[in-house]
Amino acid sequence: MAQLANSFATFNAVGNRESLADAIYNISPEETPFVSSIGKGKANAQFEEWQTDALAAAANNKVEQGNESTVAAVTPTVRVGNRTQISEKVFAVTGTQEVVNKAGRKSEVAYNDAKKMVELKRDVEFAALQNTTAITAAAGVAPQSRGVLGWIATNTDFGATGADPNPVTNTAPTDGTLRTFTEAMLKTVAQEAWTSGGNPTMLYVPAALRATVSAFTGAATKFDKTEDKTLYATVEVYVGDFGRYSIMNSRHQRARDVFLIQPDMWELLTLRPMKGQELAKTGDNIKRLINTEWTLKCNNEAANGAIRDLQA
Image: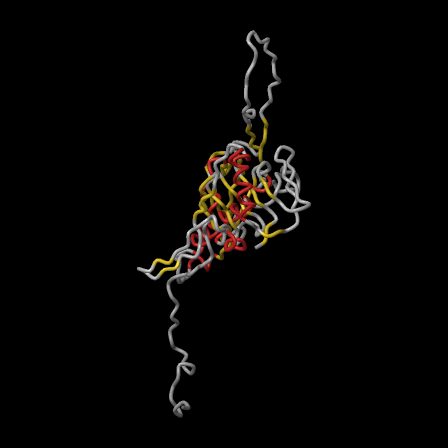
């Protein structure tokens, strides 16, 4: 029916109060499964170095009675390292905005401080999972930490024309031809990691390949729990011949990569912890800088595995 003639409606009024909820709803994901699961340490320089080593292959070791021993060459350790990377967020708030009455937060500066720290943590997660090399700081050049893909070179499976990285020479891996992700690929790399002496416990999977993993026949028993009418149609743990791997949904890694990770073989080293500070005042505003300086340490890359160049 039509509005009653001369009836006073809300759209005619000028004195109605607004109704703004005293809360702010943010659904952006905050989890950082990789950097949250690995070790934490302190960096002491812009270039952090360490050494890796491996035992000689086991053999049927026997010699004659009265044998005159032959001195074998000693294999030196391998020296590797990574550069620190500076990650930052900067924002400014006017003096007026800071003091007016606001919904959902008392201080605009404090609210954005907390928000930018969460964003920085996600940026570190993203950077750590990329195909990047270490870059040395120079005039006009931002330093960069080598990501996971630039470390894992021993236990890999990749497409045609692809190539492994070389963390010693700081060479990034070459992407190959995309191919369908199969359970056989996962089993091959899992075996290689175990043979190398590794014991990875986490399988990092991007969204594009998650359903593929859940369909692996050796991974799961899917069942219908009749008492609460719940159908379990996913896999949370993959149990294979060479280990048990918790499957981690990873939002920030490339859609073409899957990682087998041994968490105690990785560390996030921090040269400068995440901290907020006020920048020089140049007007009627508050300028804030939130930054951190960090690098990714891989204690021994041969404990891990990478299956690359994948599609569902």
